[in-house]
Amino acid sequence: MESQDLFGVVREPPGSRSPTPVLASTARRYGAAAIDGALAIVAGALSGLLYLISESGAEVPSLSGGALSGRILAVCIGFSLVNQVMLTAIFRGSVGKLIVGTRVVRLSDGGRASPIRLLLRWIGGIAYGLTILPLALLLDGTGTPPPDFAGVCITYATNKSS
Image (cartoon, one colour):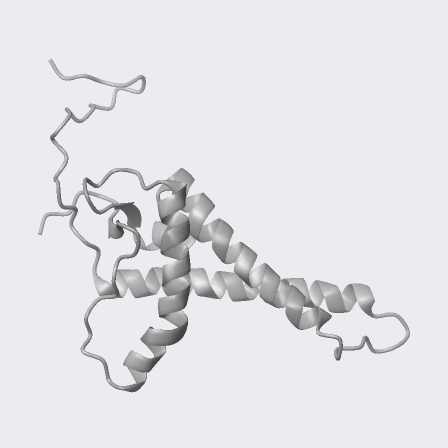
């Protein structure tokens, strides 16, 4: 007799989950990262635009104080943090990952990743994405997939056989 939840979905018996999840393709990983990055940049740009509109009166607002660039940077980082950590903790994926059909799981057993692991993954991803990845692309890297940080990995959202 199969166990079902409240909505009639068959529950997986304990131990039936594959111990090693099937990793998502590099194209999907980079596609999700591009969508997430574009969303963060758009959020920052909109914040900067709203700042300029709110500060503009009869004269041109001063851009020398760094308030505009600080605001844009803070919104970009804040949006990225909420998208990559909080949304992933709730929905198992950021907006970009959900669009391309991937999710973030624990590397050890394919279960839901904890918020602390997701925060460490976000910090590692920012450091990797801003330093090592551009250098690898400039130096014609080997095309190896990016590393998985903090014991979590990106898999296909549906069960995809190898």
